[in-house]
Length: 261
Image 1 (spheres, rainbow, N blue to C red):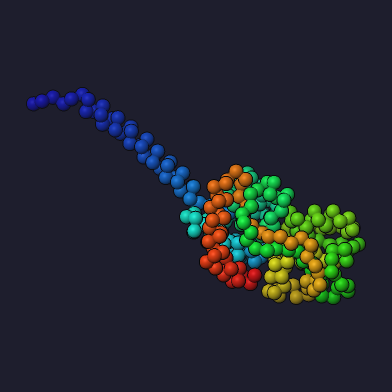
Image 2 (image 1 turned 135 degrees about the vertical axis):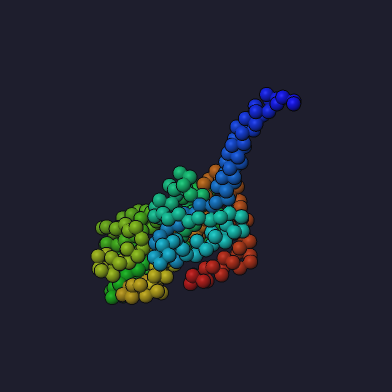
């Protein structure tokens, strides 16, 4: 009977040692590929109807959420939405916690020093909200001189209002809903904020005792856009290409119309 070769056990041992390493490498590559396919988007819980927390589903939803999901589908990404307060969005992006900001963020020169903005998504401007029994005409912000007013923290309006030097106090709020609630209670006279968001609140009868200033002339008009890290030029190019396609095929307009914008 032919004796067994001593090399056979050694060969089996080498294969046994090699297999876990190969499988581990394959799993690692698979995990990396999957991670690259996920687009982490930052959205706020209080920017209704652009991004807001749906208390029934406990998930962030809104027009900008629908739009970033449409972008993700077009670009081949799985989109996940991470909740963040508005003033924490840019720090979250620059720290690498999220890949893209998908919120009602106005494109400004100051913000463009920190992030890279996409092409325009939606025209945007401010408005003034007061109680319906407010006695006075508001055509410009100067008409509120000497009054205690409010604005949302982290927005461009705070800096603009402070620079005017005509208000004894400008109270900062985490959300426009909080600001509008204080106006309703008479704690402040008026508030300056995003016209589409405050208009949506009023259209839903959330603050029936409030009104937008009929004859107010917007002074800080611009556009909102997606924002990515300044070094992520590849993602920015993908976003702009897909965004152009969604504009052309009517998807973008349909999303905003669905949300009453």
